[in-house]
Length: 615
Image (cartoon, rainbow, N blue to C red; front, top):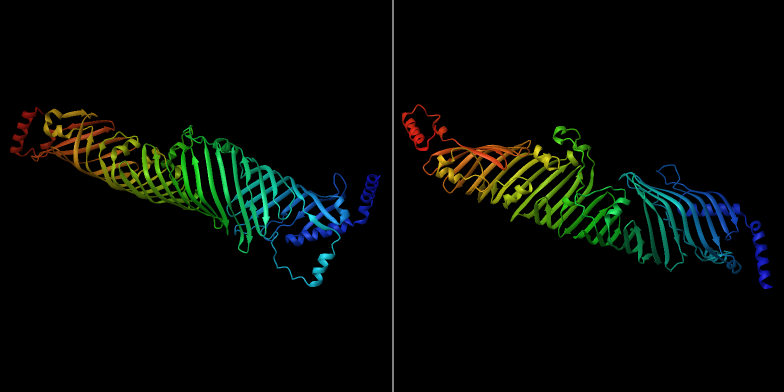
């Protein structure tokens, strides 16, 4: 009987409640309270009382005005909002919110070129609240007819959030966003679950879902473990946040268990095929982060990529945008990760060197990187103990300084690259000490003509970053010194010992060679062709000096060497041909071609011709 009486009383209350409550007054009070709290004009088109499925208020057409200095379009639009309350606590003068449901949110977040945002003043008091008098405190304690006993859970359906940054030209879009929280009770942990799709620029949106447990204690937000999943990437971590007089600060840890990067790249819309199909198989990461005063610091950082271990720390400055990093890699082969070359061959950059000026290349954000690599493989070269400093500014990338151990020697220098891709213009200064020259030639796909420790300096310029482009555009100067080594393919000692046997035209054999000491050479490059005005070396039976030219792209050389015997006689030797198929010609008859007027020299010439059987 009591149950029926309670149900009847509840039905009567629900029937007469709309008449007892002035909804127009409630609509105005809600809009005014939100406007005061957000410091923006808030309008509500319609509010009405709902009984099903729960007692509460429903509002439609809610708009929040944008900040001054931004577009006239509203900051936010809400199609529908519903506030549900529990009925039984109303009899005890308690208002218990069951859930707040927002449907059809359209939020536009903007940052202008000066770094100001249209959400900075939201929820932040512009003026400090005036101190309450004793009468005001008594009224605040006794006046409310209904007191909030517990906050409600929050549900967001079908939301769309857009973020545009005029300074960095960044465009992000969150679509199909669904968010649900448990009861927001002060001092208790709340669980938040979200799902949706994130779009970056014009790329297709990426579906994601995540779960976070949050707790607020005083002015600090204590984050418990949370999880986020995007394609094959799963991120676990914890976050602690605090709002102080200096601004918003946050810190925490993140961990990404081993995952396959390729499905993630496909979900991001990045159609990338590396040269080596065995790379990008597995990746993992573990890091700590801290955000304070517009700076994000990632430290410590430890990540793995296909067996490569990366450690260090990174700092990102939001305004002005800048990046600083110090990283250490145990080993890496960058060529394996380069994109697979397109079958369509692009025109050579030297043919249209001025087609795209460096100033039209995309500007790089300011960044500095200190990099240490234990073992670096570039083509056929293996560099160890690599140390480099990399910085970007405008349209250029500077590598300074750079040092490494290479082929039992050392390499040091600096480089500058302006522009990008096939139209990049670059400049290189390098110092080499005791580097085995055979390894350098093999890495450049040239047959080794020399062996031995090489020391010297280079000041080179060029266009393009591919081997073909470099060979066709190379310019500058090169000076080398080899204290001891072997000249491969040519036996100068045989020429000095028996010129008659070596006279005529012969093909250099790979089994032949000349041990030498004190090789010195200087070369000048222009459009990939080298001019060597001075070449000298000392063999066991002769001293050699000469000059010549060689082409990097054609791989052909043409030298004239003078082999000077201990007696003082100089024998000319012409060396020419493609690298790997060099031919040499010994011409004793040319020794006296300029001295035909001297009877003594004519006699000596006849004796030599009779001795060696030459014409």
